[in-house]
Image (tube, rainbow, N blue to C red):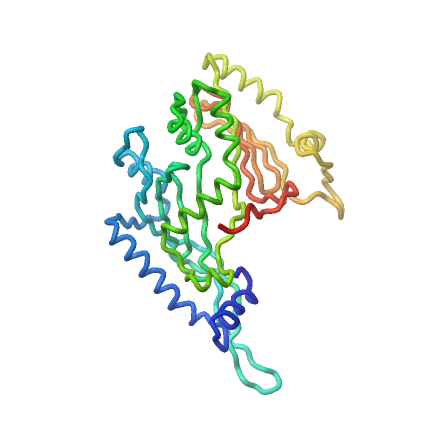
Length: 333
């Protein structure tokens, strides 16, 4: 339902209305909002209305610190709280069109944008640790599943009794490197699909049983993916020297011949067949900690000295098509 024809098929073909109109969306929104209210009240949850610019991760960290732990030292599976924020997103609105032959008017769905409520369900999952499911409060009620692979790995390592020392979204040390690596490698599409299924069974969402049976359900795709490598260093001073030398040796990463080596393709800078996208290298110093940034189309690489203890390399992909990979992750849960 990401295009007008799909929305029309939902209201006309599935629900049997004569026309598809944004007026038909209002009752669905009201019912969804009421379900969220009942869900919050029945479980005695906090409903947090996020202020503009408020750090949601800091709010969630406070709830995790205050949560009671089980005998394994883990936060039990639960919904921590529900948040609401107004954000801009793509929506469908109704405009009037006129039949050129008869002169009669009829409604027509047109895409646009609007500021609507977004509902955040922050949870602790038994398998994945802290996760978040986000649902738009307006048709077509798009959703996002946000999970952290490091939290998943820490959760699984703790359950397996593997000792480790955390390092701000990384591992500073682990007792069994091979076992933790196997845990990280095991976070695949099957695990993510199962997580989505658990959350959809638990949380309120706007699609009824008959709609789900007719094929109107959530399907997973990759909106953003981040991959990181954290190389812990024995001596912080040596790590700083290493990183400074690394920057000096990579100041020219943005040159076309070097970029082609990194990304495995020939870069054409000018003419009708110029390679689309942005190619840029930046060296940024924040205080006394420098960082190296490489941009490629909608993706970025960032490298920096993490907390004076490790070399951290983060690759963030915002469009898998940049690397010839389809966005679709798995079949629907």
